[in-house]
Length: 257
Image (cartoon, rainbow, N blue to C red):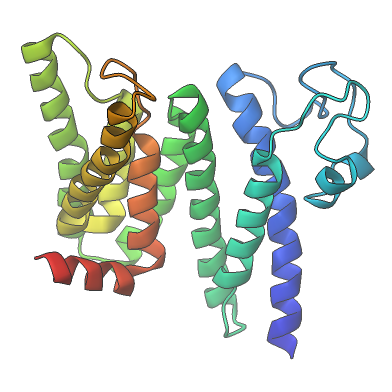
């Protein structure tokens, strides 16, 4: 019963964090202060009152529109809040101890950073350095406390140098940048935690996933071959399975290889 109570509390906490993640998703790409400035409607600039900023509930009661100008509010807001709330619920440990709760918070913060990355890249086609640095610190802490140094050292090197080399070769052959710097850095920081084999799997399966999504879009003329498609979301989806559902991912890989 005590664990259930804390899980409910964790869910509410996750919903509130999701509301803050929406602030990061909106403000980081445009360079706005996300700590001091109060929330405003991006259309009419009306200040949003506290009771209009309650996770999910306010979106429902406002019918997905700004109270003042009636412009539609992106459904991304409740989606991010619900995802974050669910993540907090499922990541909360069954055993109530300081070490388990600390590990749970660290994994939750990593998930939150990946979620912010996902939606920023989806809209703006960038993966901000600040988030990559934060992820790098978190993954490094986990890696050095769990693995031999060769795991994170070689994994990080492969994650950074292999995509960098392929991108440079592509540039020499086609005079085009095939992979953004943010993607390369994200591969690098993921390599710290995933290790050599894990990051190779991520590179391989994110490319496959990107092809499975991109080719039908080209085939049905939703985009053309010259349209830039953000690659970060594919890296992130695969990494979430590797980090949070490792047994499921390993079973999937064993069916292929």
